Image (cartoon, rainbow, N blue to C red; front, side, top):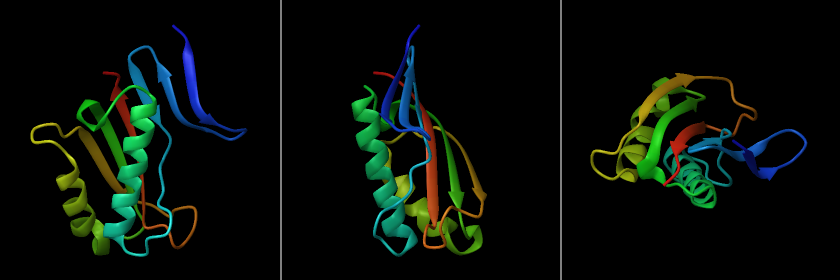
Length: 116
């Protein structure tokens, strides 16, 4: 089986396909300042990368969500996250608190999906 890399540079690939699996690097937001906006931005990036890799959110297998402040942001992030899915299509998920790459980043999400 071959490995296909999408949006690669010297440090990482935005996405990678291997057989019927799609692996995404952690996606971070752009300009939004609050957790709801940042979560929506990240999910839009995930949608775009999954489409480029031949998948979509209905084929997610697993997600890991990193929050800079889980106590403050968990409920608001969950609201955006829950509305993003088609009913009955939620993946397995882990959510944890982590120090992220820059102080203004409130959320980072990485996923694994099956190809369509």
